[in-house]
Length: 137
Image (cartoon, rainbow, N blue to C red; front, side):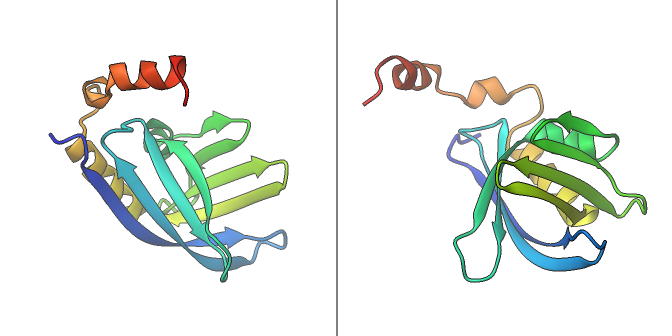
C-alpha cells in the first residue's frame, strides 16, 4: 500500500448544548497512511476556521462498542445504537457531539482497508521521524 494514501469523509453531526437540545454541524474526517494511528476531525462552526482535533483511530474504533478514553477525549456508544458520543474537553471549554454511527463506521472501515490493524508501523518512516525528533529545523 502507498504511504501517501488518504481517506476522507464529511459527516453531519450534532453538538449537544447544555439544555440537551442539539445544533447540527459538519465535520471533515481525514486519515493518512503516513500517520497511521491518527484521525483528524475538523469541526466547521459558522464562517470561522474549522476547529481540528486529532484522535487515535483505535479510540474511535473501540468507542463504538464501549466507553473509552480519559481526560480530554472520551468516546462511547449512544443509547440508541445509531450514534457515537464524543466528549471533548479543553481549557476553552467542553463539548459533547453525537455522531451518526453508520457513516463513521464506513469511514473507519476504509481506513482499515488502507492500513490494516497491526500493520501501522509498516507505514511509518522511522528514519524521517527520528530525524525530526533529533535535528529539528
